[in-house]
Image 1 (spheres, helix red, strand yellow):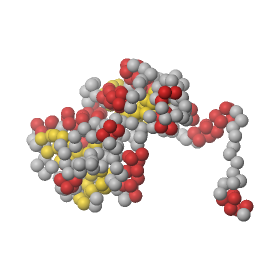
Image 2 (cartoon, helix red, strand yellow; image 1 turned 60 degrees about the horizontal axis):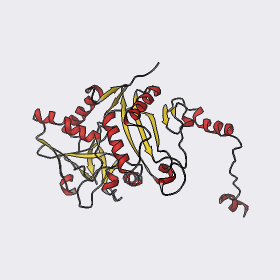
Image 3 (cartoon, helix red, strand yellow; image 1 turned 90 degrees about the vertical axis):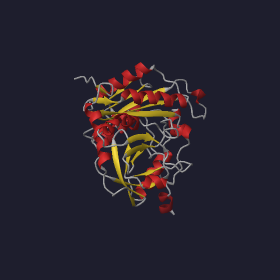
Image 4 (tube, one colour; image 1 turned 90 degrees about the horizontal axis):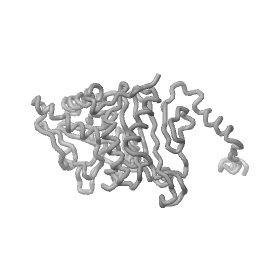
Length: 338
């Protein structure tokens, strides 16, 4: 009987931290043996500044984003000491916040300044800069009325951003996709995305493809999707029911170079059925950290000849060149301090 009680946790006694200093010591234990910190810097409007100690990178449990999912986020790439497409991501971030009925505690210029200062303080040369707006802390009720001030958080995540060159397998997701209101805003409710990713991994695939209620191709769990037809047309799904990917839209601006070279015939957004899409010559995911990830098999059916497509890589090269040596409108040099 004693063994059964122990197994059921009846003998377990939760530790009560008697002081803040004891708790801080416990928090630091996790990071004491980590040589290179994966999160070199965080900003919190709750604390009112930039945090360099990963043990202190926390948000309040009563933040409406934590217990009700009332928050939005976005991400910018840090590559070779530059922020890539910071402004277009920040603009989308504020559009998402407006849809979620979350006001910002700061004007746009100040949000941007905080992000730039955070990137500089992090000393990170490659990685991502992710940031959130929430209704803020206050209570545990459904309504945000008790959240007195919205909260702004941001964190730098060190990562080796590399151009993807290997092809992956995908599946059609059985997880229902978000309705347009939620799919078109970048909010923190990513449970469908997580379940879709887990489903793909359980089937030995990299990720999945969502099909909308009309039977048309939508998007991946956190990326856009594109196709090259046998007539050498670049086709992306319409953005009216899915997230308008910043990288996907930049691709549509850059791809005409391949039309001028005679390598692509045309570029458009259009509806594609799953049958049409599976019979295209090339297929790809499009996203900030990729920037193009070739898809060579879908539901065990090869796409085209089952190899990484030449035009997929040509489009990837266009985006990668833009990321590493593009114009000042796309790349902002981070003013690192010594």
